[in-house]
Image (cartoon, rainbow, N blue to C red; front, side, top):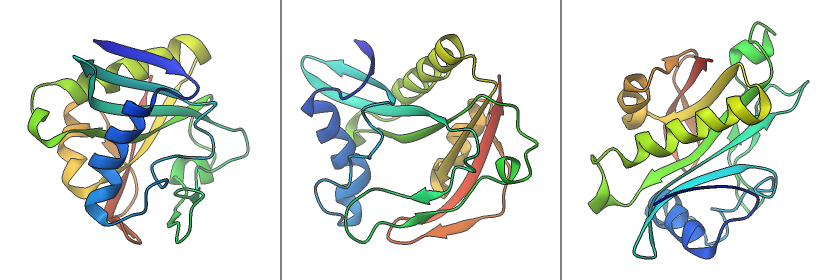
Length: 171
């Protein structure tokens, strides 16, 4: 079952986010929660009460370049800004995809693509979004490219997480 919700979803969603994205990096419990989760749009696929795939999207405020802290907890990495937002060449409203992940035994079944597509469609429908941005872990770049996203900035390292590429998609 595909679920979309603005605001805080249930604990199973956060548990999956932690298990897929934070625990493998040795990050503390709580680092999977972001300070703007209450305002973000969350998407997930759930089967028999188990959350298999997650993602979230939020509007990037006017005047923001998308940079900032990865989370509110200790040792939070600094996330670099998006070039097209710095240069003011991106169309607004703009949104950012974050916290995409699928449990290992459920990967390569189209679940993440379904969550991503639903988040994109809802950001356009609800907010009239014109541009999407995301910061992909290096190994995930081919997945996002297959979904129509384009690499826009040079590669960079996010402390405690690893190599990333910034990506963009016009809507």
